[in-house]
Length: 431
Image (cartoon, rainbow, N blue to C red; front, side, top):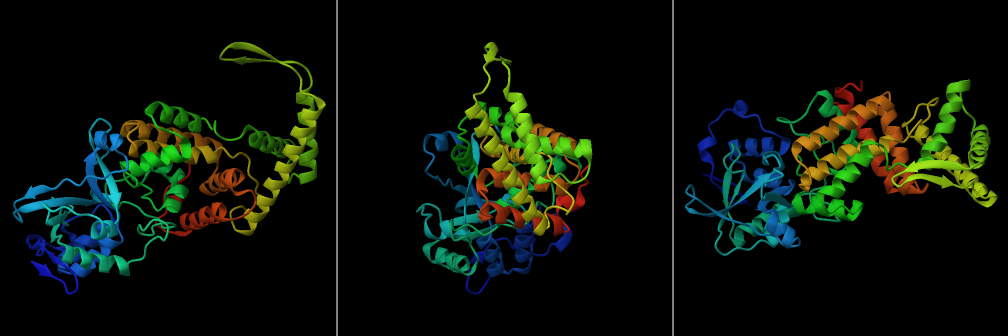
């Protein structure tokens, strides 16, 4: 039994005599909990909990029917001879099971301190069955003490969760650390760092089943396995990237290949205009799902509109690349050849989001991650090459040359990934 001043009482003293290296914790959160438990430092234990994502089990069928609700199911534990609510930290979650009914939702300690009420449950148990397992009373008085730890912990103003954003977070055991799967996960690392998620978790839960489903619905309008499969395949084939972007970059790429050296913006614009005019003459026949379709030539007005649009795009790309060079994203003599990275990075992310929302199996998720890795390695020469292209695609889609949060957030993630010694971009070879 340990009792910390200003906190609560923990039951877990049977492990207090174990050596510090007796257990390889899966992540930093679990390691810090274990160390605090060994010391009997319950204030420190709750400080860790206050900065962690906490998960509780629920029924997938129930949540699908009532997505805005949360049910806490207690279990009888003979250790304290009482009903206890089991709470898991992210490193202790079991692998997602596409066919099982059990899923996990995520809440911060603040929610348990302020909102959770269950008259029949007087205890919680953190990570039951693990070396960092501890039982704590959950009376209103004790929950008020938890809230004190929450008040002292930093948190995100927008959601109340711990502020993980712009941090490189990883599992320390039982996760991908090398090889092609880890390389594929590294493609989504800009997203992982920006969103504060574990970059190397193959068995991905994200921020819980309900949140992952909501993410896919809100951002992608994905509400089913079939829709997830469609978008996953499209991203793996770079099918979400604008064809106009790729045409425009392709003109410059061809010029650089044919003539060598730097391609001036004016020259780029003139050649793009010539190609567009040449491609607009004559009748085309295209093969589609309904057979061969006749496409009439564009009118002069339509051709002029396309030329104007591409020339504006060339200006945008040139200005973004100038800013990228100033911010260290691009070398002085480098240019971006294709923005397929924008899709390949999101393809690796989509593979995990689909798993978190139970739209796919873990095997399907890993297969998609491997395909993303192969595609990206074919198209790019280095992590930095990939990153600059990904960021350009993101900016062309969202930023509109404001250089606001859509750019600044991912720039910060890029800098973390290119400087942190534990970064996959520094520990996993590109090719």
